[in-house]
Image 1: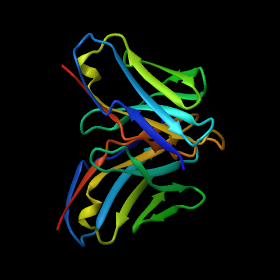
Image 2: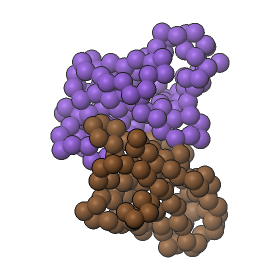
Image 3: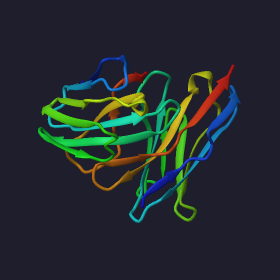
Length: 111
Length: 115
């Protein structure tokens, strides 16, 4: 069945460091892949969406791209700030009304 | 603008007691509605979804039930809580048309602690 795998559980960075989070997916259909961000005590919010049509998404300094050959998609940011500290989830749209989330990556950025 | 409100914000309940969590969406007609469960530090597990009043589909039940009594209201409940029900419950909505784009708008969540 459809699935997403997010292996990095925790990433610790300093301000201005480069952020890279990877996710792999498995699906039999054309994928729609998303990144959500969750700040402490809040619900997740959509950060970026990538489809086979656009291959790349950019928002708030974050960039998401996907590689069909390796069935992976990643999130990156050139220079993180302390305010980027949050949990980042990759997600895969599943047919019907489902959205499959990865296990999340906790990003901690120190000033 | 659309708003989503969940209640209560937090609950501490005893094992075996009943539970009711609610969610109201304002400013959006005929949304798709969802319940998700998140264990502390864990991923988001979809529990239920509803595309219209009175219709609820179960994805993973976890001894819970859901109902949609009004277009803008979604209720999650159980008659008997288990320790495993502890966690963060999130309600979300999406556009009712245009297929599944993956764009969900989440509420602030309800934190449940079962003792």
